Picture 1 (cartoon, helix red, strand yellow):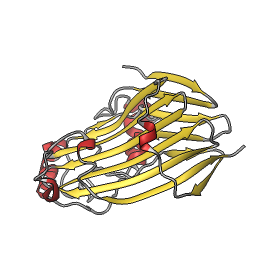
Picture 2 (cartoon, helix red, strand yellow):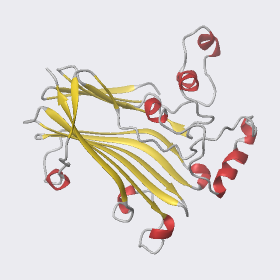
Picture 3 (tube, one colour):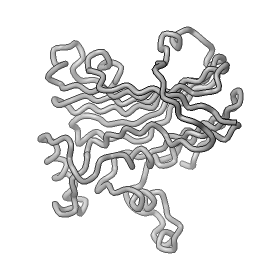
Length: 261
């Protein structure tokens, strides 16, 4: 499967998406990589300190938003995984030992498996570049306003990476984006469920309204222990929205990405 690209223009914006296959487990072109033209796997191995990657990484899956002023924001798996903690294991549960045992057959030994956050939790909120000013604010995205029925001019969902944590839950990073006549809305979400232990939802939301010269950005971190939700109607689900009202909000940060001329 090659890379499938799409482009959509709206107001002063250009949205580009790309989708392709998962990261291979072995280098497909060792001779080319030895000569300096690196494949996706070798790029990831060079750029990341992780001793192991998620089960499914989509290196060519990207969503990029560009403004005519020169402002850009892109979402991709490589930059998301760069924010995974390496050097310590923030969450230690029984299945971490199973994780280690499962890697024995791959050639890893105990000395090769350095401590790292094997849940692949990332607070990635996009790769921002170009002309813009970040201004702190107290405004919050009006989610009720976004529920008002509007025509959807363009919609895309892009999966960046996913891992089933050796059948002990799920960790998934994804981006959803939609354009309406009034503007656009983006949700970049990391969802983690470690069965019997905790649920974590880390969101970045972007909302642009055509009458504004800025993008409102909201970053939220929610986390709750399974012991606190075990009596709820939802105990195990792959749908993060099922947990949103059950787990506490740890922080909420809002700011404006002001478009500079």
